[in-house]
Amino acid sequence: MKIQILAALLLLPAAPSFAQEQEAVQPALQPAPKETLASDAKAAAYEMGEIITAADGALGTASESAAKVIEKVFADLGKPNAYIVGREGGGALIVGLRYGKGVLHSKVEGERTVHWTGPSIGPDFGGDASRSFVLVYNLNDTEELFRRYPAVEGKAYLIGGVSANYHQRDNVVLVPIRLGAGWRLGANVGYLKYSREGRIIPF
Image (cartoon, rainbow, N blue to C red; front, side, top):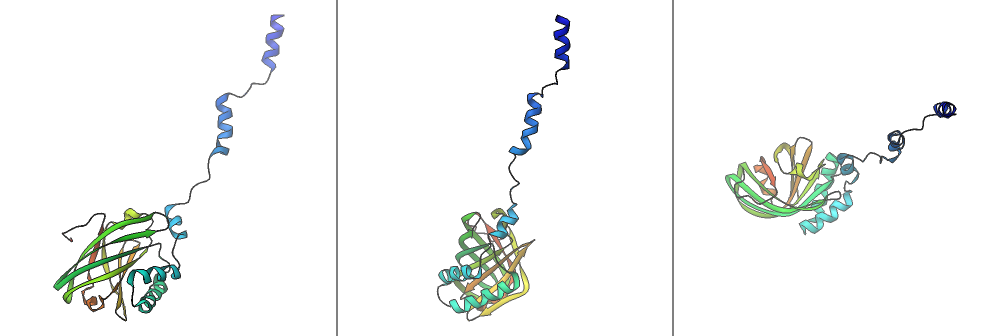
């Protein structure tokens, strides 16, 4: 009798182990892959209307001139995925210094306070205080902002007292648009360095 029972048990199909069951259902429980930071940032780009509205609030007057400058930048680079609203001041006697502070706006990462400094050299004299509105391109992670950005030669606009020039580091491009600083376009040879905290030494 015992031999018959043992033979019957041996003929039964083996039941899957608990580990095997877990393996079988595990793939169905895995979430779909998340979008990369780059695709998120690209999808959250700002339309021209949004940027012009923000620039109107940042620059106050000369909104028509600012809109024309923004249109030219959009024609060159397309839609930005972040922008900075702030103020800056500086002075120069051949060698110039610039200090600024503002708020970075991003649809993905929200708002964040940023500071910037920058030396320059060129036919530049006097001092100024201006409102600043910076278009930011290809910024996939806010931490990528905090670096030094050299000026891009040959990329500058001046319309009705509103000026803009280009700064680039790797794929990230910054376009500071300034009201009341157009006469300082001769000082574009230099760089801007963005930081989390304010700095006295601009280098």
